[in-house]
Amino acid sequence: MGSRMRVVGAIVAGALAASGALTSPVAEADSERAPAAAVDPPAERAQQKRKPVGASRATRPVVFVGNNWEGTATLVGPRSFKKLGVIDVVPDYAERMQEIATNPYRLAYFLAIRALIGEGNDQFVDDMYSSNDVRLVVISRPSFADVVAISLRSKKIVWRFQVAGVRSDHMAVSPDGKRVVVSASTGNVVHVLRIADGKEVGRFASGGSPHESTFIDGGRRILHASIGTVYSPLDEPAIPDPLEGDRVLQIVNARTLEIERRYNLRKALDARGLKDVSISVRPMTLSPDEKKFYFQLSFFHGFVELDRRSGKITRVVRLPNLVPDTPRPAYLLDSAHHGIAANPTGSRICVAGTMSDYATLVDTRTWKHTRLIRGGLKPYWVTPSADGRFCYISWSGSDTVSRISYRTARIRSTVRVGDHPQRIRNGFVRKDFLAGIGFHPSSAPRRTSAATAWERPAG
Image 1 (cartoon, one colour):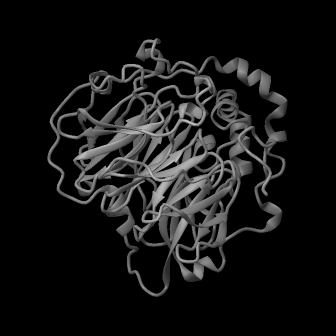
Image 2 (cartoon, one colour; image 1 turned 180 degrees about the horizontal axis):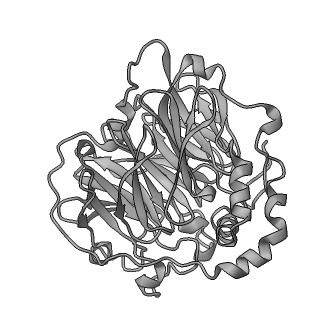
């Protein structure tokens, strides 16, 4: 694993020349249809309450943390908040690198992902979920453009699905645990896979750079957003939208995979006086009745509330900008803020202030924020705990994860994980599998680049 950089070095220049420029095709035009009323609990709570098949004393809850640059997933105990084990998510590293090194087109994109999105690092784990039968952990691996299911018993890959295009990204699991949807960043589609065997059972169209998806209405629909070319300097108000990629917020029928509604965010933001705000929807969360969507936007310090039925922006929550002199091109993938999650009652929303290095909670009665929580560097994702008491936040620049009390707005505890933690998900594992989780130290992934400007030596 320590020879990652040497595998491709000799043929870099030729591959880049052969690849041509990065492109992001534009999807179909926006359309509007009225959504059905929401009657079921929001997707986050459905995921929190998802139970393994045959749950018993043989299983235990865990928190999965994906260490994107290291190629590992750390398992954390939700009660002790201590590290339980580490999974190698790239056991097929040598095989995948051989594929890439012998394909100039793939190699060019692999190196582009490293340079543009990975900040000089390869991206080996973006998202992950455990299966309902507690046998597998399903992982999207951006630099390898695939999704794999790894056995929690054998630590081997059980199935692998290669996405359209050259990069995989966010995922979401249906409330019944049978399907997983994965965004194909450059393929401009979202794949729907059967978790049992990795077979594609459908796909739906997105915009440029499909991003986050979440199941709503008890799993009958999917709320999905695309973000456009955030790896380029094209996301500027003065630049026509098509050059930034088609950025969409849409509701998809989870059974037919037809697009039921696309929101006109440019119109909604303009009507609210936010004409200079990007329409790229970043992480999002929902009100308990799913009638309100709360989401972050590229370059925006705060979040907005969108009324599901009317499609109007009904509230704008501005949060402190501690980097007012930072130019837009210096923002991390256009992310002023990247991470948001409401508690089960919807009374507080936990927010990651990515560029400003803080977390804070917003009270949805007063819409005021709590004290700024300075627990690390580059906070990059927020997930509610399974019991709803805490929000988990990844400090990707500090290689740590904290749990913050929704009630007190204070960090209860912090755990050190791997290199560049991003996505955090609640899941389950068999206790007898947990005892054997890990890999031999000689095969452990090693860092592939020097520390970036975002990182500091651990104190």
